[in-house]
Image (tube, rainbow, N blue to C red; front, side):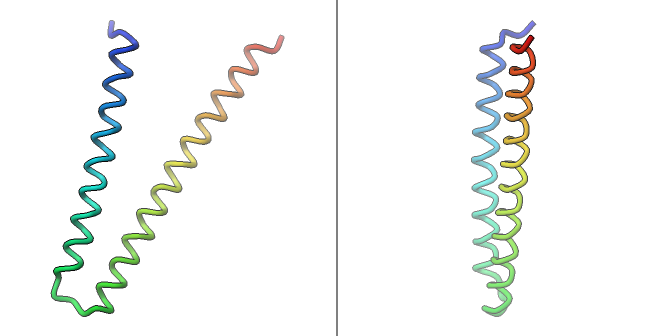
Length: 82
């Protein structure tokens, strides 16, 4: 059986790596938009779409994390109440 501390460390490391690769990926997408042969108007539309997509993904992740925390708190309150 895996120790809880080791599992927590692996989970934390995987989250950090996911964040790092996400930031690098989005940065490379902006770089690709910037150096493309498209007109400036098209570049602005692409960058705006990418920004809105990233913002929407953060909103979805934040909502899922908040719901998870609220669910855990409700579970703890239910266990503590007789």
